[in-house]
Amino acid sequence: MQIVDDIPSLRLALDDLRYTGQANESQSHGSSGTRFHPRTVGMVPTMGYLHDGHLHLVKVCNSECDVTVVTIFVNPTQFNRPEDFATYPRNTEADCNLLRSNCKVDIVFIPRDPSIIYPQGHTTAVMCKDLNSKLEGAFRPGHFDGVTLVVSKLLNMAQPDKLYLGAKDAQQCVVLSRMIVDLNFRVQPRIIDTVRDPVDGLALSSRNVLLTTSERTIAPTIYKGLKAAKHYVAIWSHLIEFRKELQAMGPDASVIKKLIQHLYDQVFVDSASTHHCKAQTDYISIANAETLDEAHGVFDYQVIASVAVMMSKARLIDNVRIPPYYKSDDRERIELVSSRDKEFATMLLSTQGVSVGPQLYSYMVELYHSS
Image (cartoon, rainbow, N blue to C red; front, side, top):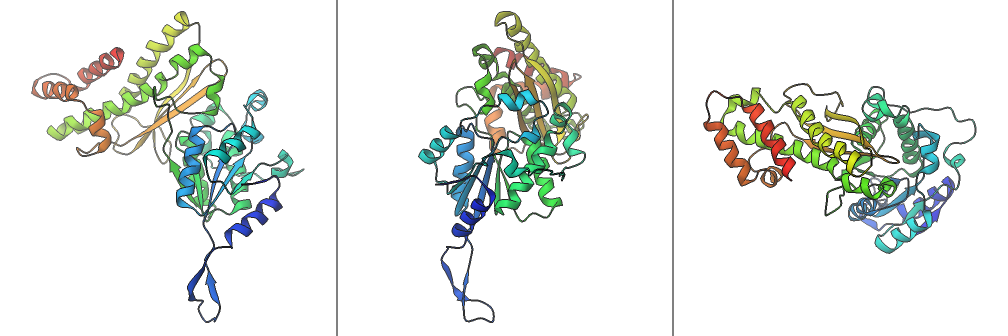
């Protein structure tokens, strides 16, 4: 594992690895020489303080590419508050040891100073208009401008074939995928599923170390609310299969938001008095998975259900993707819809003259209150 701290060293190391592959037995067109096929390069950009989620990205990269590059750089341009930049956890020595002992990493790029990335007098900006000001962008002005700028620089420096991103940062994935298309980068974005705590489902994040004991206890509620949203849509899908006319009634984006908020209020309000910790919901969003425009009413396209919750020292984000309709053989639907759910759905379908939506909402509230 090579550790490099400047751009010329990164490019030299990559050239050595990229062009030392096996020669193809076929001949070049019109030439007696042998054609060489460069090795594929995958890049995993990080801000360090690595955890199992990062390691999973690296291992997927290992399985798909010949050469793996990990970058560790706490990017100052994506922090809209200087205190957040100053307190962001850092431990590059531990990061390198973790990579060395758990993964096959060919190059770790750790710029020795921000000026390596941002030379004195730099004025260039890279931004995705519209996408950068929604959701997280509204609460963190300039954040995604910093993300697109630094990632475009890293892509230019390393010229990877694939870029590995974690699905936990859903808006970042949408923004960077758009940037790659718009600027004609020759790189394939690979969005890898969120890695969660195997016990309670909390999304792994470098910021989790900033949670107090009480905050860590209630933090899994974030994913619980999102899972309830997927469960709600899965039951609607089950109902629609038996009565197609119900498709005009649900699932409804506003009801999903209401359900998530209800579960958060139940836990977060109680925790303020019992655990003396405060959790503030910044937003709950049900948005078009491509445009990030908020969904209204019944939707017929894939959405991203996302939330942001502010604890005392850490702001936690999470999300799930939800299709407009789960097919009966979808693995996720099979896992979500229990025999109890099917019994309730059968009762709903057999009852005449009642509103399905309100009854299903009440059922979901009761179900997740008791879990």
